[in-house]
Amino acid sequence: MNKIFSNLKVIELAGVLAGPSVGVFFSELGAKVIKIENKKTQGDVTRTWKISSEEKGHAPGAYYWSVNTGKEVLFLDITQQEDLNKLYELIKEADIIITNYKKGDDEKLKVAYSHLKAIKPKLIYASVNGFGHESSRTAYDLILQAESGFMQMNGEKNSLPVKMPVALIDVLAGHQMKEAILIALLKRERTGKGSHISVSLFDSALASLVNQATNWLIAHHLPQASGSLHPNIAPYGEIFKTSDNHLITFAIGSDKQFKQLCELCELTHLSEHEKFSTNQNRVINRVELFELLKLKIETKSFETIYNYCLQHDIPIGKIRNLKEVFELPEAQNMLKHFNDNGNSKTAVQSIAFKFLD
Image 1 (cartoon, one colour):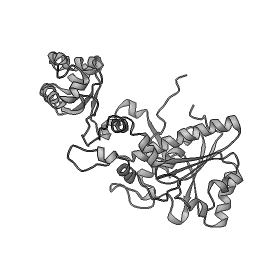
Image 2: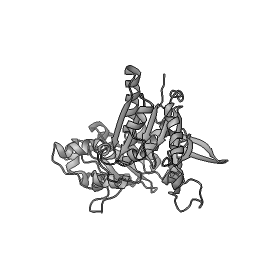
Image 3: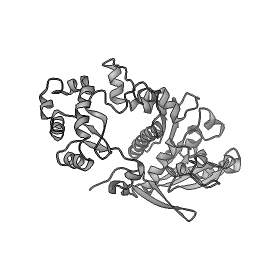
Image 4: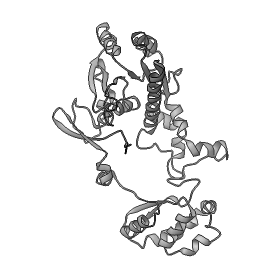
C-alpha cells in the first residue's frame, strides 16, 4: 500500500504547511515528490521557524520537517529563464503540481495553469489560497482561525479568543486538497483529462464547522467560548482531577454511558433523576451535574477510574502532554525516522489509515 503511487511524479511549488502537507502525503505513498524552493530567499520560510531550544544556523527547523520528509529538494530561481526552463522540463514528466501563489503571481512567474497545461495537457494543477482564487489577500492560519469563527468559539468562558495550538485550518485545507487530487486522478483515469483545482483555506474552515455551523444556521444558537464543553452533550469536556492529581475528561454520548458513569461514581440515582435522565436535561443542568461528579471522582485514583471505564465502555481520556502521548504504543506506530545530513530525526507520518485487506 505504501508504494501505491510509485508511478506518480509530483512537483511542489508550495511553501509553509497546507500545500507541503499534500506533497508529503504522496511521498509516503511512494510518489516521487520534487519540492522547488526559491534559492533567492533560502527556500521555504519554515526552514527558519525555529523554537528557542533549536540550534541556530542554516539547518532546517523542526517545523519544516513536519511536512517535508521524503522529498527531493531543488533550489531554483524561476524569475531566471534558465531555472524556469529546468522547471518546465520537470513539468513534462509530472502528474501533479501543488502551488500556493497569491493571485497574479503565478501569471507573473509563468507557472499558472494556462502555462503548464500547454506543456502537459493531462496535468493535475492544485492550488491553495486564503480566501478564494479571486482574492489576493495574504492569509496565514491565524488569520483564518480568526475570520472563520474558530477563535471566537475557542477558549474558556469570558476569556479572550484563543488560537488553536496547531495550524488546523492549513491541515484541513491540505486534506481537502488531497481529496480533490485523488478525485482528479480518478477523473483522469476515466476520461484522460487533467484538472485545475482550487482549494480555499476559508472554505475549508467553514466546511469544518459542522455542528457549530448548523447550531447557528438552524437553531440560531451563537456559539460562545466554553472551554472544552460540548454545546450539545453533557457531561462532555468537563475536566476532572483524580485523587492522585491526574486530569481526565469524559465524552458521555448516550443515556447508557451516563448510567455507567453514575455507577462508577456511586451515584446511581442520578441517572433516574428528572434533571439528568436525558441528555438535553443534562446540558441544561450541567454545572450542577459537574459538581456532583467532581466530588466523587476526586476521591478515586486514576488507575481505578481508567480501568473501570475501559472495562465498561465509558469514553474517558487522560489529558496528556506530548511526552506522554509519544510513549503510547499506538503513537510509536505512527512515527517515521529519517536522516538529515547524517543526523537521525523523527517525525509523525501523515498517513493515518491502514488497508487491512
